[in-house]
Image (tube, rainbow, N blue to C red; front, side, top):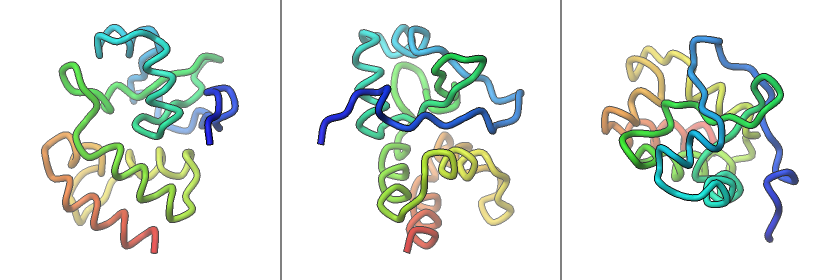
Length: 125
């Protein structure tokens, strides 16, 4: 099924203000792709977007160098397949987890994707 980004649910602001978010044009610049490609990444579940100050934004922690954090798209897919809404996924990715330790997104950024994916699979099923 093909849907427009505007048809995709956009998570309302629920993350702490200290979580830096980038506008869609800023994400496009960081990734070196057109804005339309960023919309496609959101639509396809490779990135999650949220509404911040009335505009679409992507948490900066979802990017590393000029790429999406390794393991993030797969984690999003596992949780979506398990019935989690984008808002819940965002909240979980930035929630402290003493068993990791840290947050799931921090673990993904430090190349501990297997641990994160295991937890996501356990939550989803």
